Image (cartoon, one colour):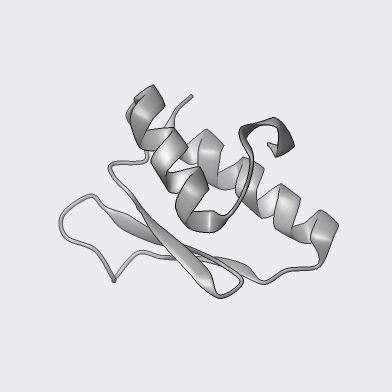
Length: 70
């Protein structure tokens, strides 16, 4: 899964759960962006590239979301 697809899935989940979700392009170095999901946040590195499994699992853990939910 690419970073952009991950962000879109999280945003869709947030709409379903009525949770605020936003992407901050300015808070992050280089191609990194910050994804806020309610009070939690994670850094998505280069949204155009493929996410590694461990990286995606770590980001889901930071957002308190189970892999099956997306």
